[in-house]
Amino acid sequence: MGSFSVWHWLIVLVIVLVLFGRGKIPELMGDVAKGIKSFKKGMSDEDTTETASKTVDHKGDETK
Image (cartoon, rainbow, N blue to C red; front, side):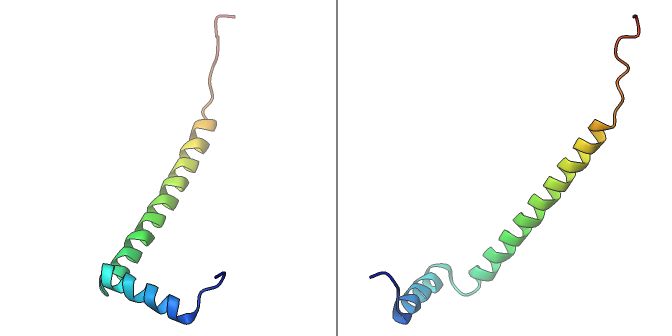
């Protein structure tokens, strides 16, 4: 009950292929890759904006 045999995995593979089709799986993986790239780009953009905002000098009160 704890481990699956080769037959279990073959049945799962057939069900996945029937549901998604042969051409759909590479398309889904491509979409996942684009999402990961977009996420990484967003994270690096966030880091650069944080760095830029940290280097801004504020004058403070000049009336003192």
